[in-house]
Image (cartoon, rainbow, N blue to C red; front, top):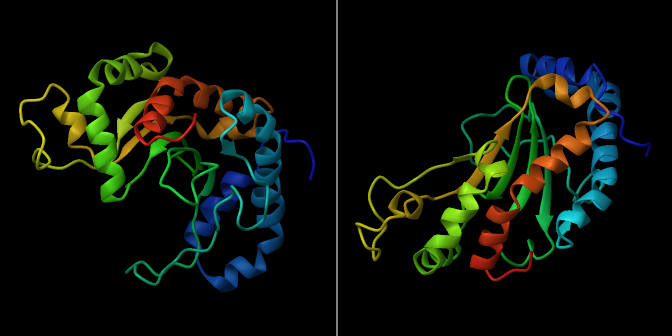
Length: 229
């Protein structure tokens, strides 16, 4: 596995072509290009990210494995979906909390897709008990939450996204100052970036810099869930 020097020029065109030809036959015919344009550079990115990630927090893992690591599988799980296309047409890289297998914890995420690239941080669709812990922590620590959201590097680059309830969650004061946040079902924030960024040697530092900008946000979520940051 070599040093990461940017994704090759064929990466984005390959993903676009896969989207237009999302069949097992086409993918098998072009599997060698998937390896050289997508998987190999993605694994190099993950390997080089590992020592950088430790500087942000020692509790997140960058695992450069073809399966079971930080690189998400290209194969879609179609069992419960009406969409039966067999392959994902994006690169998904997730740096999970060390406790992520045992508890639902926040994480860092990188999404590479033609016209829709972004850095993601936080926790997506937590189970009910986890969501309750975050909401209760918001009630008990509103000032720290507002400070985390207002942190200039985060506030200037990231946007809080995800689904929310239409009405206040049951059991919480309806007039609470953080009601819009209490209604959230996802606690994720995204920072978009242009397609051309992935081909640059400095792309790794750009992504790591994005993760660093979310420090107060991620630290708050970890505190809410009582996991170390």
